[in-house]
Length: 188
Image (cartoon, rainbow, N blue to C red):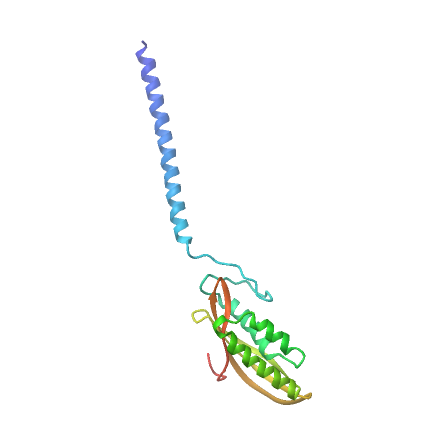
């Protein structure tokens, strides 16, 4: 038996084992770091939702949306409600109702039907000249300011500054319209 050869082989095996131990340690640290990153990401999933038109980039989580998304959805909702003619109010009402929170559906549907009947009866048209959008990410709302122009039989009867509050809620991984109401013009 060659003692020198056995000693060299033993040292070689120890060196290999040390290298393998370091590799296993590095893999274990990598697994732990991956687990930590996964736990940090868990529950903060962002879902990409496409508004009617895309003007800017935005983000949406399962509980709230960025101010940019609120601006885009708020201006779209305002267009559906305020830029109407006797010929367009019915289909805009139907589109609007697809975005309404289920608990508010009946109330908003009744309100829009009464408004549609009134516009058709007096042959009125309304149009909002948008001036400012003030989003609130914390409140998931946007205040819309502009000049609401009203024409009856083609004659302008009103052109006044107005402000509207549009509030949103989330349910079923989807944004819903909770409130659309007129507020004092100076509201933030």
